[in-house]
Length: 132
Ligand SMILES: [Cu+2]
Image (spheres, rainbow, N blue to C red):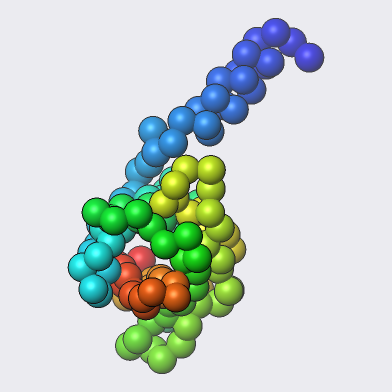
C-alpha cells in the first residue's frame, strides 16, 4: 500500500471520529414535555432509498434517566404509511448521543420522524418534520 493512500485513509478515519464536524443537515426540536432539547444531525440531507447516517443528541437540565429507552417511529401522515424499515437508536460513548441505525425513506414528500422516550419516571416524545 502506498504511503499516500495510507495517509488518505488515516485522514478519513480521523474525520469520522470528530463528532459533528462534517454535519451537513441538522434539525432542532424540543420534546413534548419541554424536558429535552433534541438535535437530529445527518451526514447528508435526507434522500430516498438510501440508509441515512444520523445521530440524535439529547440535552436536559437534569441528568438523563439511566433506564432511558428510545423507540424510533416515523412515516408520512398524508399517505398513512410508516417508515420502510425499523430503525433503532443505539447509545454511543457520548452521554445523550444515539446513533440511528437502519433509517430509510421510501419516497419524496412530507415526513415525520419521531422518538418515543420511555423511562420508569416519565414518557416523552420528540417529533421532527421535514420534506424530502
Ligand atoms: Cu408516502
